[in-house]
Structure formats: structure tokens, C-alpha cells
Image (cartoon, rainbow, N blue to C red):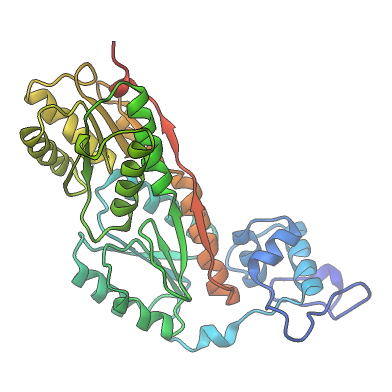
Amino acid sequence: MGGSSATPGWWPEKGPGMKVVAPGRAPVTLKDVAEHANVSISTASNALTGARKVGAASIEKVLRSAAELGYQRNEAARSLRTGLSNTLGLVIPDVTNPFWAGMVSAIERLAGEAGFQVSLVNTEFAPQRETAALARLVTSVDGVLLFSTNPDAAAVQPLLDLGMPMVAVDERFDLEGLGGVYSDNTGGGRLAAEHLVDAGGTVFGMLGGPGTLTTAAERTAGFTAGLRERGIDVDRIHTVVAPYSFEGGREGVRRLLAAHPDVDAIFACTDNQAIGATFEAHDLGRVVPDDLLVCGFDDISWSSRISPSLTTLRQDSAGMASRAVEMLLDLVTAGGSPEVAVFPVELIERDSTRRR
């Protein structure tokens, strides 16, 4: 077979200049090959598996890099499970939430580009549905992207023990063998605190989230710490717990303002809550932003469309989706080591915190 007839799956013999992995060295991963060849992980995966058409030049670069680095596909690990069909599991709490819906769309597109389909499960925030979904997926998918709302690691550990490649997204898990892609929620809470103080807030309210969610705990902790660092006394900080939803925001701000009518600045854990809070504040006769500042978290599309437009902390949802898919494909196709990536957030100032 001549070099001009190279096809996916072809491996050149060791030749001059080719590197051999030393005994005991960590296995070369698909990510290593992609970086060495200067292509995306999906392109490297397609070049090595033939799942989707890749240009001849890209195939040649990927195969040469794989040979030089000593990359070996981990087919043995994949064969331990049955029923595989180039499918990734995606477990998500609420497909109607604009932030998660956008992530689902991006993940499905990115997975498709790499030759994988996505099996989507919507748990509707029910831990038992999440546990049942994971039990079903273990026999039918190559790997799982998990947007969890279940704090019980016992639901996840058995899958890791079976060798299921998994990456947690958004809600944090601290489990050995589990990859993770998260936002800097604590830092985002601090940014919200600093901005609301600078915008003229004096008595602060927060719409926290369910106690089972790490995002809620981290954003609350960051916001509280940020206020204290700016010299705000604890008796001027008031928090209520509310669901991550529009109605949760309405109900939460109603309780907050009933108990603490002097609150003039609110930070909500999500944009859905913040938008609901803005509508409810209007119904209660409070004008945003003139006598009530409101800041959210996520930067969903509606945040810039409502009136007044919503100040918020923007998560890099596109970057997170891309990194999560790349990380999972690396685990699935190469048996790579789990990694954790934390993405910064950005304050987007709009009318809801601009007093006239």
C-alpha cells in the first residue's frame, strides 16, 4: 500500500524521525494528536475513524501526528460495553430554560460534526429521573454529558466504576474520574456585588437557588463575600431561595420585598429569575432601575430584549459546550484522562442598573 492511498485507519510503519512513547509515559490522547496536527478534536476523530469525510490533507496531517506521537486507539476499552452506536448521552434538567436549550443545540451540532448523535434526557429537576436515565444510558451510549441537579454522587459513581466516560457541565461534581466544565460562579457573584454597589445600591437582596445546586451556592457565596469586601454590613444583605425560573423570580422577589421593603438592589442567580423579579417588581409599584436595581446571571437572549434590558453575568455557553464535547470525545475515543475547565464570566451592563 503506497503513501498516496492512505485512508482512515491506515497507520504508517515506524520510520526516521518518528517518536516512540517511552515506557511508563502517560498515553497519548486524541487531544494531543489534534494539537500536534493543528486541527480540531472532531477533525482528528473523523480522520482516524472515518466517521465523516475529512480532506486528504487533514487526514495526512492527523495520521502523521498520530504515528509520531505513538497514539493508539483504545478499542479494548470501548468493547467492554455493548450496544455502542456513536451516540453520546446528554442529561439536562430543563430543556425549556433558554441557557440550557442553547447549550443543547450547540452540543448536538458539535457532536454531529464529529460523527456522533445525541440521546437527550430531560429530567425536569427530578433526581430520581436523573438516576434512572443514567442507569439506562450506561448500556446504550459511548459517553455522557451530565447537567446534574442531583447532589448524590452515588448515582454517578457506579457509571465511573464501569468505565463510562463522563463530563459534568454547569453543576460541579468533585469525583475522581469525572471530567468537568464549569463557569467561575463565585467570581461572577463578586462581580455582581461590586457592580450593584457602584450603581448606587445600599440594601441588597439576592434570589438564591435550590440548595442542591452548586451554582446557587457558589454565586451566593461570591455575592455575599463581594459585598462584605466593599464594607456592606451583614444586616444589609437579605437572601431568599427560589427556583431557577420566571415564576420563581416573581414569587421570590414578592417574599423578599414583603420582608425587607428597603431593599434597593437585587442579584438573581439566573436571568429567568431576574426577569420574573423585574415583572413582579413592576406589579408591586417598584420601578426598575430608578428605585430597584436588578442583575441576573447567564445572559440569555431575552435579557437584551425586555424593557428595561437586563444587566447580567454572561457565561461563555458556546465555549463551554465546545470544551465539554471535545473533552468527552477525548475520553471516548482515546481513553484520555479526565480534566476540569473553569470559564470566566463577564459583566454585561444594561438599563436595569442604570439609574436616571
